Amino acid sequence: MAGPCSVENEDQLLSTAAAVKAAGAKVLRGGAYKPRTSPYEFQGLGREGLRLLALAREQTGLKIITEVLSERDVEHVAEVADILQIGARNGQNFQLLIEAARTGKPILLKRGMSERIEEWLLASEYILAHGNPNVLLCERGIRTFETYTRNTLDLAAVAVAKRESHLPVIVDPSQGCGRADLVIALCCGAVATGADGLLVEVHPNPAEALSDGQQQVDFATFRKLVQAIRPFLVAANKAG
Ligand code: PEP
Ligand code: MN
Image (cartoon, rainbow, N blue to C red; front, top):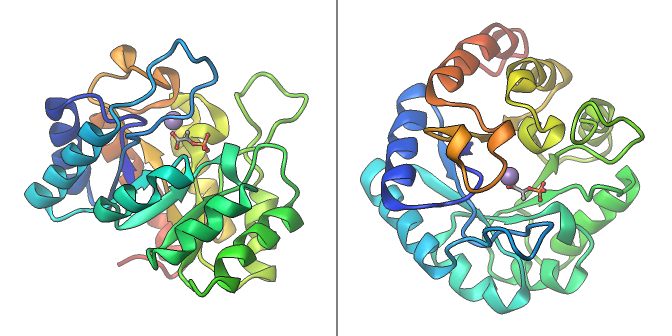
């Protein structure tokens, strides 16, 4: 799964969709509703972003994953999304999990940034217990004392989740380290550790991105990434 952190405009989204599809991605990511640390930063295009995501699907055939930030938005986000993303900041927003579960759409549940593995797995059970079996667990880095990287990607959590749960485990190396230059290495490590999928931020011009510019990879780097993970996919019997 790959695409921009935020949906910014039609050109940005459609060019990224075409590039990640050509490189082998199956799902297009892009936030229309953005949970930003500062209220003065870009908050996403909202419904216009959803319209652009639907257009990108129409043009490329890629499935769409996008974040739903609040219960209020569940219904109209679910009209466009093939997979609903629950963000790290909402990892234990149980009412939101229940509302999202009721749509019947697959749900990618990010691990909260200070969430224990057990809490993350129990959060996933809120979705399962409300009749929706289609949950993807997503490790996206946790807060530690380390500041060299934005978060500390916890690959041990991937191994634990694979052991303790039957659910597919996805790794988001982009939020996981916050640095474009580390994304390929972490993707290789994630696949080697048993991850079933990757969620990677890709932008046509990361330096001009409206959110998370320092961690988004450009198209050429994404093509390199797809090549770099190949031997690890083959070793894990997941090359397709
Ligand atoms: C994102 O995927 O752009 C995002 C905001 O992720 P997280 O919820 O993991 O911070
Ligand atoms: Mn992001």
